Length: 232
Ligand code: CA
Image 1 (cartoon, rainbow, N blue to C red):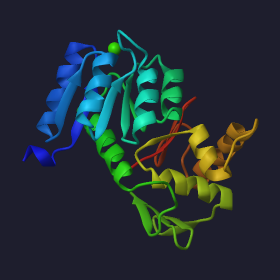
Image 2 (image 1 turned 180 degrees about the horizontal axis):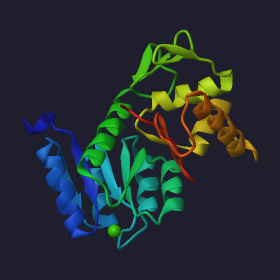
Image 3 (image 1 turned 90 degrees about the horizontal axis):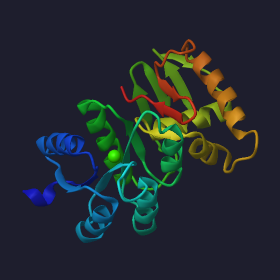
């Protein structure tokens, strides 16, 4: 039934990582099209029309960011970036160019699979827009209809802005959201003080949720990149 499998274009020049990822993905019922270079990836992308791209940013023949630009010009399919820990700025560029998320090397199997599932789920649920219904994660519950947040059944009160930030993160739970993506979604645009404004709101949110500084119970903060709502 290979027709029903999600097709993943895997772009990675390091053979051991490429083989490792291909093995994991195939063991989890994904079909993998491996590419060693940017040029090869570009050809395979247009001929195979994959459902998702896993992309290493450091390619021998071109910058992975170039490839994101090229793919985004043609398609909205999810792009998951593999990046080294030293490429902080590249992660932000990649996300702002339209990559859906990233995994930092070295990564674990379960982390990679979780990111792939979130990216595929996000692409199926279509364009942005606040969802109706409920979001739950552990003892946290967000009722989007009533704009009400409870933790262990107890209501936590947020300002409009704080709630909107939470709702955006919950909508994309499991996915890293850059500062600028959150700012666009909440304020509609950015100005000089936007990141500071976001950080101040986020500090209040985390305080109200009872997270101590440095403790990531509900929302993970990656300094210089953005925030990720945990999934469970
Ligand atoms: Ca590489």
